[in-house]
Image (cartoon, rainbow, N blue to C red; front, side):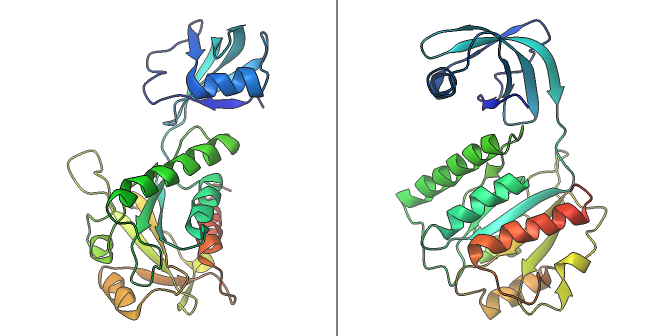
Length: 257
C-alpha cells in the first residue's frame, strides 16, 4: 500500500484525475527529507475528511513534492459514528487511549472532566490539552493509514455529557444527533459483546472513566440520561486500554471488523 500523507481540510476540494497536487509544509518536508520519497513513486494524500488522491510523484524539491493524480476516492463517514468520551487521566494514560482509539477507528474524541479525574485542564490548559490530543490523533491516523482524522472536542462536564446535546453534533438538518450512550462499568449487568447497537442512531457514545473509576452520582446521572452500563469482561482494564478494547468490540458488533 502506498504511503499516506495528510493535508489541511479543503486542500483536495475539486481535485480530479490528471491534476497535480503539491505536498509542502511539515508533511512535504517529512516525505522528501525523512521518508526519501522519489520521483516515480506511488503516494496517497488525504484531507482527513475522507477524500484521498492516489498518484505518482512527478517532482520533488527541498521541502515539497508534486503528485500527478491517478485516482480520487471519497470514503463516506461511517454511521453510526463511534465517539469516545475519555476521562482526563494522569501519567499520559488518556493520551495513550487517544492514540490507540484512533488506530482502532474512533470517529470523534471528547475529553471528560470526571469527578475523580486527577488531571485537570484549567485556563490555558484547556486549548493546550485539546490541541495535544488532536495532534496525537492526527499522527495515529497517519500511522494507521486512515483517510479520516477523528475530531477532538473541547472538554465536557458530567452535566454536559448527560445533556442530550452535550456531546452530539448537529445531524445536519437542524436537529441534534441521535445517540446511544454506553458507560463502561466493571460490574455492569450487560456485557458489551452482547449489547445490540440500536439501528436508528447517528452515533454510539462510549464513556470511559478515570483511574479512580466513575463516581456513583455520575453513574446515576448518566443512567437517567439513558445510558447503558456495560462491562467488557471479568477483568478490570486501565483507563488507557478500556476505551480502545471497547471500541474493538463495537467495531466487531457493527460488522466493520
